Amino acid sequence: MTCDFIAPVGNLMIVETVGELLRHWRNRRGISQLDLAIAADVSARHVSLVETGKSNPSADMVLRHVAEEEGKPVEGLETLQFQLNMFNRMPVPAAPAPSKTANGADPQSMQSLSDTMSKMQSAWKRGDQSVFVQLLDQLRTGSPDTYRMMFTERNARWADWIAARMQTPGTVFVAVGAGHLAGKDSVLVRLAEKGIESQRVY
Image 1 (cartoon, rainbow, N blue to C red):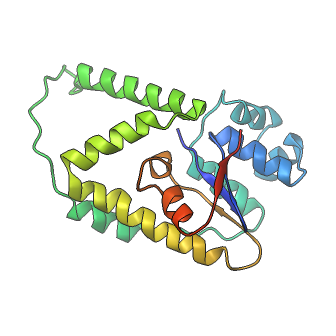
Image 2: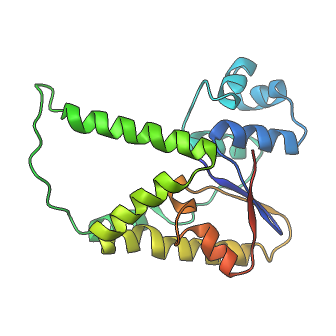
């Protein structure tokens, strides 16, 4: 599940899946599925499967490939080194030893994770942020420092970058994980505080 947003100068438009994102991008440029497939060196059927959600490659892979095919520069909002340093500074939670099967996996935890991911994906497609907000609230309560580093500080920094970039003519495409678009500290809330409105695109 990866939903991110497109940020043309003047407003933000939110799309819900990689497929929606790809179709929106393609339609804005008047590019057919066949033309995109030829440019990306994949079959038109594969483009169709991605757009309809029947194939779900990672957003990073799709976005980077499309940008590079168009000769557009790709930059990160933060460096890999920054992310590694951030994770190194996070407090390590004490966890009880799980019961494991012969292959080392905890079947209860795996099923719980699968159920949670499924709920998150369904909720996002409906435009329902409540599942994300609940998970973010649990993280904020259980590990305030982790929440602050992962969401509060990064979302504020990214919103500052987007607001500054939108002062420059042209169109910029910004992609962030869905968890950064929900809750009281989201990128969208930080942007709204700066007078930058957003709308969901279906």
